Image (cartoon, rainbow, N blue to C red; front, side, top):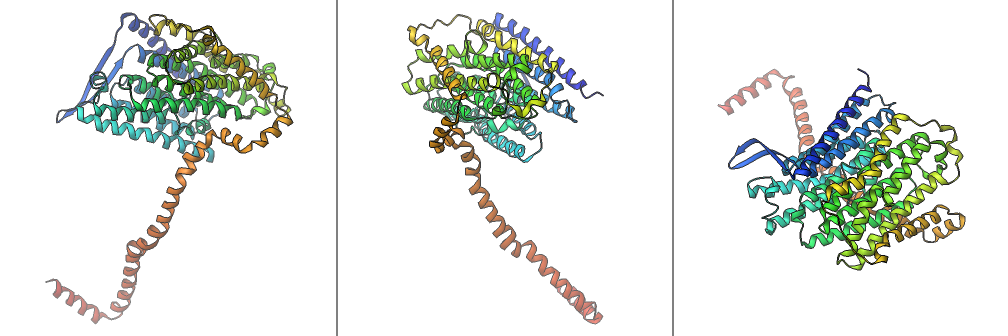
Length: 572
């Protein structure tokens, strides 16, 4: 069987399912329908273990987006991973990943959510370590262990919900929201979502997961792994009302957005810049969720999925062309050699910035205007607008380095014509990056949001975008004088560049003491006293005894018989 066959089969199947879910979703929205299916697996002591499926417009729409992006990514992988010997294994892993996400989306039951949640964590580990080297193994370990924290919280929620007699959390969301037990459950759900969606202090795994192949990055960072936490909170949104913990979540997610925006401006690795922009957008989704606007968070989640997947696919194409160079300082002038990929890259970049009438504008503009209308303090307001400006800042800087700057001679021999298999998949997402914002706005919000603000407040988004563009231009034309100024504040720049030292704190900072303690235990107890006084010591005693026994008894047959008779007398 041809190794490309499974690519095409998977692509057509996922694409057709995506279109089918789209039609279903329109039918469900028009008729305001929800389907709730339950299959009882086992029942004991008034405790029912049931497999439940919830189909409403939200789950169907999200599944449509996940399946569309994954089908396009698999089609893209046919060319991108063409030199891979085990392409079928790679496609199977991606399909497992998508299946885990679908299971998470349609589950109103906390146990089946755990299956999808854990499936995402385990399969993502396999995909991050796909290129088998030390860096990938470290990144995979960090990803898996960070996600395990969230799994532990979900397990605690499962054990806590046994008190209610069922794990279908949908039944309790409304009438149990004032119960003190539900407060603990909602805190654990928020913590689980923070680990999966990489909020401070769990942010360091997300840029590390860039060790995965680029098609996987496009899938992971757009619609699957990192959005699982946001989706879970959208589903649990009735519990998240008027809590002190939500204010902490708002602060942490706003800081995540701010921190990722600053770090992306210092970064020179193409994939890491896009990963940090994902982190920034996740902070935006989580913070708008903590304000009590789940529909807006879901809207931004979907529009973001389209242009972020496209951004990663364009980056993969550029890295491919540049002979596996990821440093943006060694690129430049690529719009002359790969114009169509540059077109896709620029459109997705502009959608990320929130340029009017592209996908990102509709959700981002509405979020910022809702923020301007709300009664939040000035600190959060400033953080939001600065973070939006920083998004435009690093996007423009990236565009300057890749498209507008002069051609760098390091990669001149690696230019080739564009790959049309990759381009076809990118054009599907490019179309969606342009139109998805407007058509989702018409579908999700049954009535138009009328946001009335003073002229300057209304134009605030445009102001910060223009300032961000200008700063991006300035920083991309740095020369030797700027480098000298940069060296004056080297320590502070280092702090901002390394994500506020979060990777060091959450890996080496946490691990060192535990690993050191473990090594001492192994050296002094396992290999030391316990070895001497237990297995190894007993073995040596028996060994000496048997050597003596052999020497003493087999040399003298009479003594042997006498000791045997003595032994028999003692027994009887």
